[in-house]
Length: 169
Image (cartoon, rainbow, N blue to C red; front, side, top):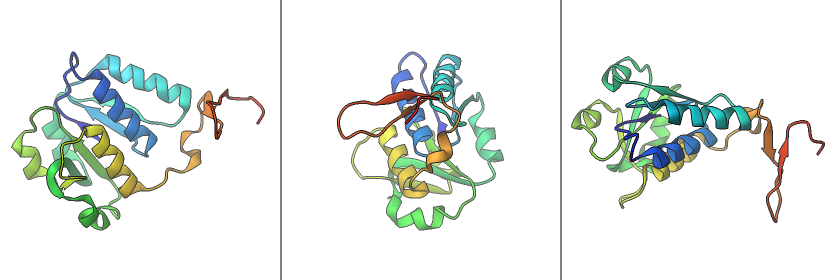
């Protein structure tokens, strides 16, 4: 995923939520423009604690990143083609880069993307777009994807059950 136009002073909560949703739903990394080392460290801490390999990579040059990306570029925008219509064409791609923007996305993104995709035709957050796109494109995340963490959730019909690694079932 590429988070474009992140404003460190204004957007840390939204960008953090986008990263957490992407991580939980199967993404490998988030490129962050412009870089925000504090946010990257917070996400690294979550990954260390909960497992997996997700990373945040800062980039000052999103244009070069898009030019060099060897895969399918999917710009998530409420002005795009409905996700359900293009998902069957995107799913077979070995590598997909989801692009989410900030306040104003340069028109160049619309031109460069292989697909400009809408998860809905109403205003919604970038987090919702990432979550729905990953759910429809990746499907269920394998349980083993988050190995190596020091904590895990023990499913429970009532209450919260978080256990430290090494705790007997």
